[in-house]
Image 1 (cartoon, rainbow, N blue to C red):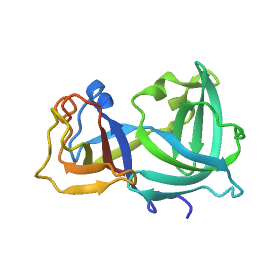
Image 2 (cartoon, rainbow, N blue to C red):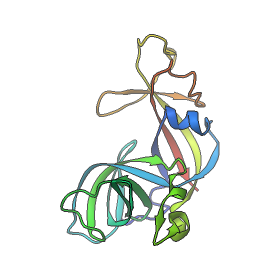
Image 3 (tube, rainbow, N blue to C red):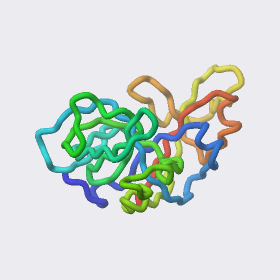
Length: 197
């Protein structure tokens, strides 16, 4: 499948408690703009040079696309993955993967948290160098990872299980995040089900 906006427009994007505490909480129906970062699970050279993206699970994707190492950031590299959508990572380029090569990758998506404006390509802000990296989003659903029985946690016991991850993590559906109070003080994960608009 070649990516196009009509083929896949609902994305499950990870969002951590600390991000929401630093920036803002969200409710179902909220709209905002953000670039995407990715956390790769598995990456390997690709024989195909046809960009594609498919959803493997609620928040796990597999894409074929081109990797571009664009800058250094401390001891790490900034690289962009173009599989029909743009996402970037601040990490070391894996051994055996060269800039401008096509790769097949499994990954999670995470919202940018404004790092895009701290990064550059050829001396220009990355957001200006690649203007298509910032997307508009509308939140359709919010899931929270619950650790039932943890001391100090809201138990969400009256809520049915909405999703169980491949690792057995239980997520429940909520109408809005409240990062300071949802979790009893521990770091948790939300999955924001968002429509690309």
